[in-house]
Length: 181
Image (tube, rainbow, N blue to C red; front, side, top):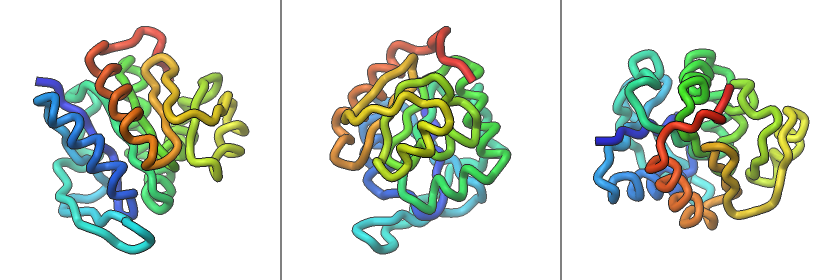
């Protein structure tokens, strides 16, 4: 059975975790929520705190080698906290080093900038972080979903159907020799 890690912490955009998780589970695969601390994490929904979700493993316990792919939901607080945590960044880098699919939506790519895995890639994101991505060497485009060698990116929750479809497609394809850190 395929196992997919969803890396998130407090303040993630609720639909950007629940929708990909549901798509993964509809394939009969396992979706684990990996976070900075054990317990639960609280989502952000419609401008307020949303539901809490149980953490499966912490970044210290979760090893990229045990997973087939990584999903990075957005929200503003979530990636802003992840991108300053070295263990989270190492977890992200390991997926790239192992050639595995990585999917990031909305503000999720912020963490990828700090993990130093985006230079030379074509990506999209929430418009407000376009400059951050371009400054990190990304060819930024405004499309609902962009796939660049197993790196899947989308702009916002409206793009979730296309994002989930490409995420599933990339996981089915498996490892990509051109995916790189």
